[in-house]
Length: 138
Image (tube, rainbow, N blue to C red; front, top):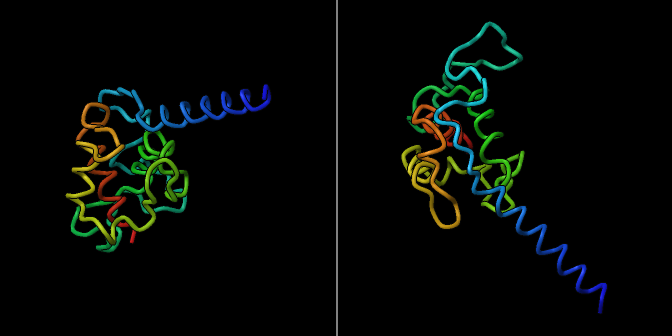
């Protein structure tokens, strides 16, 4: 009986930690932790930063994958996992096949279901970058 109480306590603590990671109270006032949002700073690292992805972004504009990934890692990984496979939040690996850029942007900005709104945590440029990148996931 005593072991069962400890197991229940540990389970509740893990659940609370997982859920608190999803909401982020990360108020970065439009900054993105030093990432170079929208410019190519001379390092390529095997990606074509600042260029479009050949039109696979559902009409959402240029996709700076490196900047969008940095924003994702800073704000979304807790619920959607490193590989976008989901967990607490839904799987985003093919979200661009199901939602338009505007729908993705609205969800990030205003939240939906269990997802909190990020309009006060991310700049509109960061939301645009993240929306366009996610829309390219098909």
